[in-house]
Amino acid sequence: MTRVIAWLGNRERQLFFWINHRLHHRSMNIILYTLTHLGGATFTIAFTLLLAWLAPNPWNIVGWQCVAALAVSHLPVALIKKWYPRVRPHLALPNIRTFRKPLVDHSFPSGHTTAIFSVVVPLIIANPTLSWGLLPIACIVALSRMYLGLHYPSDCLAGAFIGTGAAVSTVALWPIV
Image 1: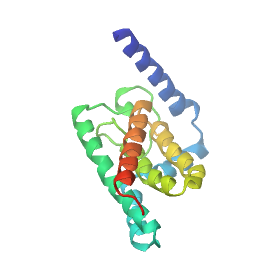
Image 2: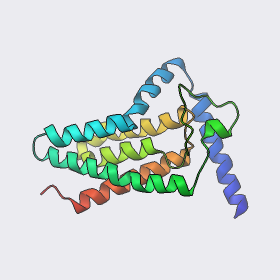
Image 3: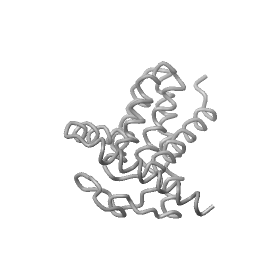
């Protein structure tokens, strides 16, 4: 079992280094540094509240579902970060490319990835054709977290699962009807 865990850890680091180094390009720096903020608290809270307050029915209800999913999704994130204090890659590994003011709190799971998935999934459930635009955006936010040296792939995968789970649960408990 220890060998399997070590093997998985090595593969994860290889994938992380590939994303963090091999994809590196000046234009990608600007694009991903900008898009990563779509998963940040300022954008996700503002977007969901504006949708809830200003959108016509039934989209205002979807907005409230997004607000609830966003709030609910961050409870397990906060608990897991305390229980499993994983050091961020840029602090744990040598020669990591990072950018302005890199975060120093715990890495697992990715809060930005959790947030963006908790917001886009209710929108996709309400109108599945939105998945063509919203799912790639959510995945790019997750990719940006690794590109910026802030998260390992498993941090982002866990965030995507938590955000999606919170969103699906919220929508199931709060139907649009």
